[in-house]
Every structure is written in C-alpha cells, then in structure tokens.
Image 1 (cartoon, rainbow, N blue to C red):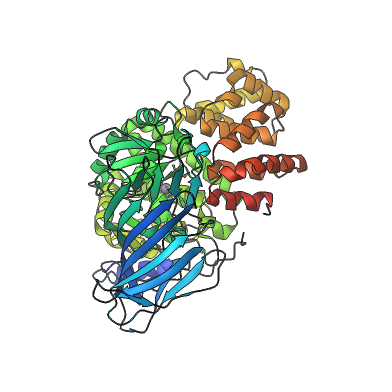
Image 2: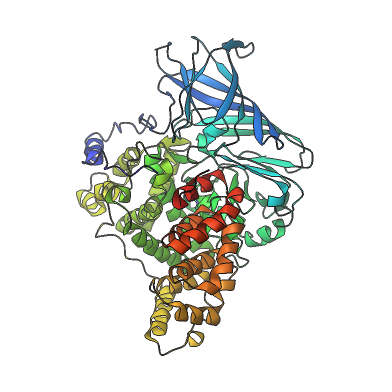
Length: 631
Ligand code: BES
Ligand code: ZN
C-alpha cells in the first residue's frame, strides 16, 4: 500500500475561501452555480471538456463465465468549445470489444479507442475520439475475472446453497471495473438498465425495483447520481414489506429475520423527513447480502446493501439502518465531489444517524453511540499520521479507501455537533435543511460547504466565526481543544463496573450487568486494558460467555482481546468468525493483530488460505497486504 505523503495543500486555503465568501456575500463564488470545478485525482475523465450525462446498460449476467457482458451507451455532452478533445473514461480490467458513436441518437458508426497502461490504483484510461456533434458513445465490453466491484458466489457460498449470487460494490472507485464511465463522484449521471439473467433469479438495482418481475429486468434511476452509487445484485431473493414504502430483500432463509430486525425502517424514514425534508427517492428498501459483503452497509439509492452481521436478533445494531438511510440526504442528495471531501458524506451521515436514533430509540441510545464513536476516534488518532487526521485529507496518489478511517466519520460528526452546540439546535436544524435543499442532487467540495456555512449561518458574526474555528476543524490534525464533551451515563456506569472488576475484589459474575445493551457491553470491554492475561480472560468468558456471543460487534471486540492475550479457548470461534463473514471492518484489525507474532502469523495464513476464496475482491486486497499474500 502506498505510504501517506505530507499534504501538499496545508496552509490556509479554506480560510481564504471564508474571507472571500464573506467579502462577497452576494456573489457566493462556486456555490450558486453548483460545484466549482475541482480536479478529481482518482479519475482519468475530462468532464471539463466532455461529460457523460446518462448511462444505458444492456448486460447479460453470465454465472458460468463469471462475467457481465453487453454494452454501455453513454449520453455525452461537450462542456468546452474545444471540439477536438476525446472522451476520457475510467475502466479497470474491462475487455473492450468495440466502440461506436452516434450524432443523431439512432445510427451508430464504429470508432476507434485506446486503453492506457494499467495504473495500480486507477485502472486504465479509455480514450475515445469523439467527432463534433457526438451524442451517444456505445462501448461493447465484458468484465474481467478480477473486476474489483464484483463478487460472484458459487451456490455453496450462499445461504440456500441452490443458486449462485452476484453483487456489486462500486464505492469508492470500483464502478469502472464493471461499467466504462467517468467514475468521479462529481460527474453525476442518470441511468437505465436492461439486465438479463437465468430463470429463478431476481435482479435488483439502486433504482426502482419490482419484486414481481423475472429474468428480463428493466431499471431506471431518474435522478442524477454519482457513479459510485450504481449497484446491482442477482440471486435467489425474497421480499418482505416492512412499511408502505419500505421493505427487505434477502435470501429466503434470512428474509423473515431481516424484516423483524428492521421493523423500524418506516419510523426512521419519517423521523428523518421531519428533520431534513422529504425523502426524495421513492421506495426505501434494504437488501441483506450473503456474509461475504465487505462492508456493514452501502447506501445504494432506493436499496441499501447490508451485511447480515447486523442481524443481531435484538435490533441492537440497527444504527446501520439509520446510517445508510441518512445517506439519502447526506451523500446521495448532496455528494462529495472528490474523495478528499468524503467527510461531507460520512461526517454528516454519522451526525444524522444519531439524530434519528435519538428520535426513534431515545436520547440515551444516541448518547451511547456518540461516546463510543468518540472513543474509537481517539484510539484511531493515536495511530494515524498527522496528515491523515485532517478532514479535508490529501489523497493524491493514494487509494481513496486509505481515507476510510474514523476521521471523516467521527471527527466529521463531532464538528457538526460542535456547530450545533454553538448556534443551538433549532438554528442548526434549519441550516441543515436549507443546505440539503440548496445543494440537492449536486456534488460539492469542502470549500462549497464552508462558503455556504459562512453565508447562511455565520453571516458576518465574527464572534461566532471565531467560536466555530472552521479552519482548525477542516484542515488541521487532531481534535480541536474546544470540541464538544460527550457523556452517556449508562456508559460511565459500565466503565465503573470494569474498574471494579479490575480492582480484583469483585468476581466477574457479581458485577452489575443486568439488562445491559450491546453498547454497554462494548464499552465495558473497551475499558479494559489491552493486556489482561489468560486467567482474567477466562474469568470473563466463564462469567459472560463472550466466546459464544451471537452479536458480531461484541464477538469482534472479544476476539481482538483474545488474540492480544493469547487466549486459546476462543481460537475455534476466531477461526469460525474469520471464515464465515467477509466484513472488512472486522477482518482488517483481526488479521493485523494476528500477524504481530510469528505463531499468530502462521495461524492467520492457515485461516486465510481457507477463507480467501470466500472473500470479496475488496477485502482480499486489504488482507493480502496485511498477511503478505503472494498468488
Ligand atoms: N458508504 C459507506 C461504505 C463505504 C465507504 C464503502 C467508502 C466504500 C468506500 C457506508 O455508508 C458506511 O459507512 N458503512 C459502514 C457502516 C456505518 C454504520 C458506519 C460500514 O460498512 O462499516
Ligand atoms: Zn456511510
């Protein structure tokens, strides 16, 4: 993995933005006319000359060959006078067969194209010379066996074991591995799709879905979305309605459990609408994927993709639903224009998530999640180099997923909580609502947000500007000194129990843990020192049965402790955990902890040899680097 470089833009560029915006309150540069153009270092595309507006897909899902094959017809528009510029697209490991173009939208002429050499992070630049007046460009292609967005599951890898399964994960820059397009979040597109697949399988997309159709599927996404939100899944899927516009898709063996776990979806949509304005995407459904899904959740519009690891049986991990739903405002409606602005997606979303939790499950639950988030952030900051602690992070030359730390999520959310507390909830709620309206269906940069904040909230109030300290929050490492203090009584009590037990006088079994929630258990475990010793681990396990927990978050936490302390009785559970799900957030730290000792490394390799074929390419890339895997 490339090493972090020192940031190139460190001085106060945003501060200048602030000053500029406050000097010109009537001409909010780069705001009213949409995002000011900012170079996306993670795309080869040239939207400043010629821009893709719509993608029409016609794809055959070939489970035998593990390939999507067909064509993508791109509606393009010249955006500069320089008519000589070719259309530059992103691609990764695609087999391009033929390119055609059309100037009248009906008849096509075969054209030329060239594929650049492979960049390990970005893939290949696909250059298509396009004549003056070009309207459509059609690429005939198929996906390669290493397409980073796709996971093809053999029937044995599914719950039902009878049908194969395919799903995509396009964020951050994997859309290009299954669709040739301008794969930059600043280049929004509408899309239509014709998906052909085998009988008996259901295809669903991040668009309007119809659970009653079969074999021959047509989809339409009428709103312009960033390419990383284009998603497809095909498998033996069943559907259960949860509310009038909400429901769940999953394999038949999982769908009822999912419907019970996610019973509060409709309430959550209503709560968010009450705060931030109407839900603008029609239906809101959740697709529960097989366990190899590499993330907890992915906010594909109309259809959140979710890991079955959140089905705890007691709704204790449904903050994930609140999170992915929130992205329907922060992320999908208003999107980050480049991956440096990722905190605009995730920081806002974590803030919204907790507001929803507060409304649906009460203040306590929201406070606990906030405290857990803050502690996680502190632990992570202790390990991160200063440039990686910055919200407006410089990712040039790096994989955008290097920016996937607690910083955009938790520091971002903390920043918004700081603004909320500085101006009061009422004012901040009104501000956020107007922000979502103002930038609806656009992709914006950090500077766009800062300018809008200045013109619509700060409005020349110097004292407030000083208090908010935006420049410090956005461009400097660490947590600003005046960050909000967060507390949750229940967690303080859990921490006290941890201390009592560590004191050695009260046995684990006699601690006051009755009725504890998942969040209290997590906090209790996290309050214990890293090195506990095997005896004390054993006492905890005998007292609370952690090695047999069915909750993925508690299991993960416990297994981290087990590896650190060489607690052998948890070994079977560790192996079972690592071979039964592919969520990167769990895999990455566990493998990293294992490889710290020679025996651990051996064990990691032994488990990984077995598990690797079941993981998604995105998780494989991560774990390969940790264990030093060579094909
Ligand atoms: N959009 C992210 C997932 C993501 C980010 C995938 C960047 C690829 C690149 C999603 O909304 C997310 O944050 N998921 C979290 C769960 C959430 C509750 C914090 C996850 O998967 O752990
Ligand atoms: Zn998210």
